[in-house]
Image 1 (cartoon, helix red, strand yellow):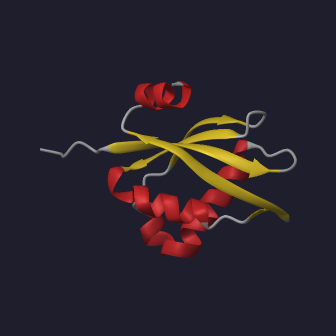
Image 2 (cartoon, rainbow, N blue to C red; image 1 turned 90 degrees about the vertical axis):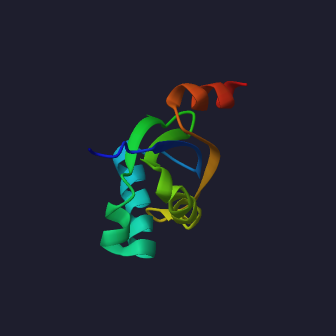
Length: 106
């Protein structure tokens, strides 16, 4: 029997000047993972973009529960997107999207 994959959702605040689309954002996130953990480490994170709002500078990514600390580290290592200075802050980590949105609003 297969084990159920436990996932965690991370709400992120993006600190960046200028326009940024979701593809550019995820490319930057993947590059941060690859730089720190290599292809093998990055491939084990199950990283997925769930929600992205360029105007609110907000994103939600999903990862496996064993990779939450790796994700926090990789996201903290982001200092540039393109040639512009940038930072990504983890606001909330949750096991479900419903709880994540509750924590953000409440």
